[in-house]
Amino acid sequence: MTAIPSRLITRISEIVGPDNLTRRVEDLHCYSYDGTARPHLPELVVFPHSAGQISEIMKLASTHRVPVVPRGAGTGMTGGVVPVAGGIVMPMTKLDAIVEIDTDNQIGIVEPGVITAEFQNAVRKKGLFYPVDPASLKYCSIGGNAAECAGGPSAVKYGVTKDYVMGLEVVLANGDIITTGARTEKSVTGYDLTRLFVGSEGTLGIITKLIVRLLPIPPYKETFLLTSTSLRRTTEMVSEILNNNIKPCTLEYMDKTAIGAVSTFLDKPPPDSTQALLIVEIDGEKSAVEEQAALFSSLIGDRAEFSLRQATNKEEVEQIWQARRAISPSVHKLRPNKIGEDVAVPRSRIPELVEFIEHLSRELGLIILTFGHAGDGNIHVNIMLDRSIPEEVARAEQAKEQLFSQTIALGGTLSGEHGIGLSKKAFMRYELNEATLELMKRIKTLFDPNNILNPGKIFPT
Ligand SMILES: Cc1cc2nc3c(=O)[nH]c(=O)nc-3n(C[C@H](O)[C@H](O)[C@H](O)COP(=O)(O)OP(=O)(O)OC[C@H]3O[C@@H](n4cnc5c(N)ncnc54)[C@H](O)[C@@H]3O)c2cc1C
View (cartoon, rainbow, N blue to C red):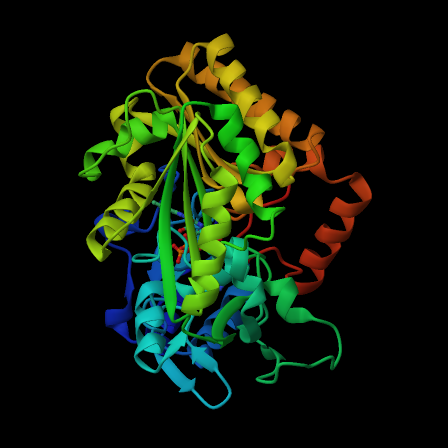
């Protein structure tokens, strides 16, 4: 752990102004953690207002070898913003301008500290649509989304953050300010650095501006709740829907434990016999949506294990989404702590993955619930535990290890959208061979030779 020299703190104070940094211990605590609740105190929290200020600070941090952790809204689920090596935490909250919404070219230019839902609302007012919709969208930032390559329910049709980021402004570890990509649909001028930064978890550079693609607002949407008495048939239905020419914009799954945790949000909760459910939404032109909805209803037909209900008004849709988005916070009533993973497997392997997790839960005597973005094979697995019971922690860690092994055996990946951060770095070798990891480390060293940008993340130690 570094101790930041006091002359450096004075210099940073001159750059950002004395009101835009803090060393008060109660403030340091506020910037010591994210959604994983595994805190580590920084030494200093600095709130820059511009790429220029960040550049000046990074030059000093490079010279003095002080770690810097860029921070969005701190909703990350892998410890990405936890300053494990001390140093400076740099929240992007003051870089919060929506610089431009270019309706002619359907692009937005936005600073990283803008909250995702606020950006969505702003572009909607101009008749445009920014589809990236993580369940945390009311709290997380666009910069954090880019750094994690966030996704959400709409990814099954519209893709994830990397599909929308066209270009970036980034401050490098040495203070250089670079730009990547362009505000054109096509650009192949040099390497695709935009894609390299998206998902780089604050380890390669600090994103200070984003050019993002926007879409026209889909004019019409229908929402369905498909409940089932069979877990296996529900998870098989995911591929069946997508292989039958139905293109939903949402295909979310919840098992019975997840349903139980949030059923109080629903005026019409699913019957007790429900083992799992799917939330299915179809959007587009009204006639096309009606055609797709008819196809979907006929696919379900009169199969005894399914019951299909269509939401009839906005309130019902809102309730369904409130319930879906409340799963993560609500599960704590089952056990005080959780290990939350977001593995992804090819869609056709979801039934095997979910059955394996059911088996793990029984074998290890743990509550494990599954839910999430089944349409893109991204299943959230919450292993519930009480961290004050060491023996339970050991069983939960065993469950996590077995989950990752099985995911990789099924052709899947450790993380669909939450990233690696601290919590999955020990498992990187399950998915990537030594040569691949070495190349990634060399890229990191090229961008950040002194290892000051978010050190201790992603790579196994
Ligand atoms: C209830 C809940 C539900 C969630 N649901 C989803 C979901 O559906 N889909 C999903 O993808 N995620 C989800 N998440 C995880 C989280 O919200 C996302 O990872 C989100 O993108 C993080 O954004 P943030 O602004 O909070 O970033 P932070 O947590 O502040 O930071 C995340 C990472 O990004 C880096 N970073 C932040 N800003 C910058 C920047 N400007 N430049 C460079 N690096 C930066 C940080 O160093 C860190 O490594 C959920 C989290 C919660 C708590």
